[in-house]
Length: 278
Ligand SMILES: NC(=O)C1=CN([C@@H]2O[C@H](COP(=O)(O)OP(=O)(O)OC[C@H]3O[C@@H](n4cnc5c(N)ncnc54)[C@H](O)[C@@H]3O)[C@@H](O)[C@H]2O)C=CC1
Ligand SMILES: O=C(O)[C@@H]1CCC=N1
Image 1 (cartoon, rainbow, N blue to C red):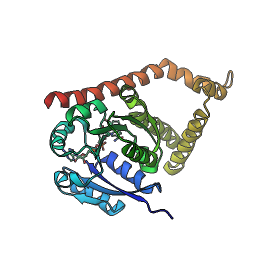
Image 2: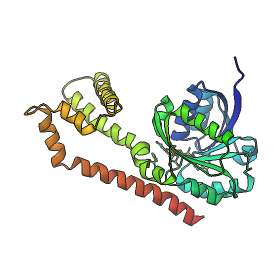
Image 3: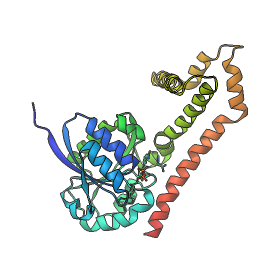
Image 4: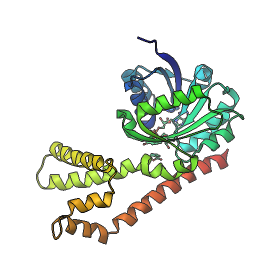
């Protein structure tokens, strides 16, 4: 068997997204053996849990270990980026890759804050990364070499599927692939609550709703138009039409699109504020 290439990755920030990404990367059996180091500003319990679960190495002070990393992943909140980037700018080398997952930050934001020629990428995963089912967006900076592009694609592969695209597309689609899982979970919860009100136990209700959503998702992935799929469900003069009429009356589509706009606006404002504060 070929020996795997070992790549050292330093995560700065050990929150929800770092956990999901590490889980996805560790589960993957790809061409790279990830040696993962993680630093966190606070919440040592979370860091200890990552060490225990994934056998990663906890790092007390990322500044002292950054030089040993091949890839540095910024997994802290957008408004924490500027102070970290200021520190990182003094340490980063041109042979390292710096990737952020922060909403709104932009690959150009990373490049502007780091020395010219720094290899940068901006990823927008979702929490399904933890089970290798994320739909991750990624904008790759101009200076990224083939070696790091390959490493980045291996990380993305561990998280699930990916869409390498422009920075603008990551901004526009953040709500749709990064945040909308939360919208889908709210949708699931509402149906689950209805099912339990009919006396179905919670475990069964969760299973029924989850499988219904999985089936619907798989039908969408056949490439059919969602409205055509909805029409297939809606027997003329039948029951579904009555439910859809209630959703239409409540302007379901308008509200969902307003939620998308609000999410993207907030993402932009968080990182813009952070850049102004820099
Ligand atoms: N949760 C999600 O579904 C997604 C999150 N993201 C992005 O991931 C990033 C993290 O989000 P979450 O994991 O949800 O937040 P979180 O609050 O769970 O984790 C953030 C972690 O960063 C640490 N941290 C903060 N400042 C730090 C610093 N200066 N140095 C070291 N560690 C620091 C905190 O102690 C915390 O553990 C954000 O930028 C967010 O936009 C992106 C896509 C999806
Ligand atoms: O809520 C947030 O800000 C992050 C960005 C995408 C999903 N979660």
